[in-house]
Amino acid sequence: MATASVGSVRKRSSRIPLTYVVALVPVAVALNIVGGQINGILKLPTFLDMIGTAVVAIVLGPWWGALVGASTNIIASFIGGPIGLPFAACNVVGALVWGYAIRMGFGKTFWSFGLVNVVTAFFVSLTAVPIYVFIFGGATGHFSDIMTAAFIGMGQNLFVSVFSSNILVSLADKIISGFVALAIIEALPANLTSHLTLPKSEGMGKVMWITGGVVVGLAIALVMMMVQG
Image 1 (spheres, rainbow, N blue to C red):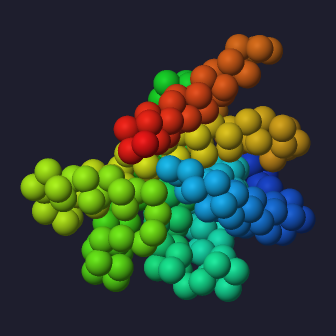
Image 2: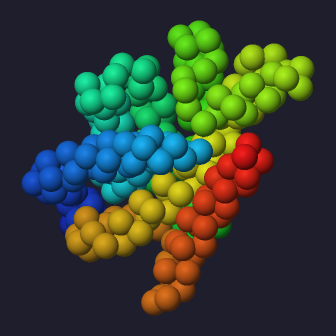
Image 3: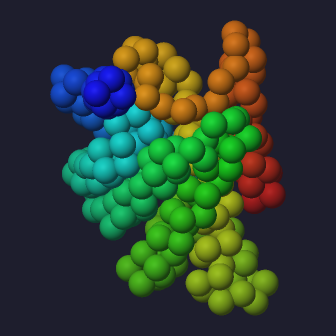
């Protein structure tokens, strides 16, 4: 009886109040849209439209993250045009990978958390390639189109060229997004994150790890810009 009681207490402790859910989901959608708009204005070799998706997928769960991801692309299509609407599938896939990977215990250390971001980038790119090829003919006006053209010029077929360019962009983007999301999660109330198993480090150690992760993503993006420049 005592064991059952302890189990029920633990189960209740992992439940997040609906008020937090209602507050966090729209804020995450807004964060995604703002990030995507800034990325578009600055013409960066990233996307920055999945930071909120990562936060919600990790904190609330993969399907809440999927809701944020799909909502982001639907709302953004009314702002910047329908070109991003099919890529809602990519935002959903990213949420599912982040959310389930963390819940399966793959993000316990900073190294493994970084690997989760890399795996997320891989699956998002796999989802994006057929959208690029079959709906847009391989180009959407994004920075990655330059690299796609370069790979095609090297003799690669369209699918391989689109994947090669997209995975490079996605690696930079998901590493940055994942570690920025981790920083945001660290700032959330403890009762929102107490059920999570995330990388642990004290004081400046955690700041340095998170900053290092973001710097790695930025370095990949900078290299791409220099090569194409």
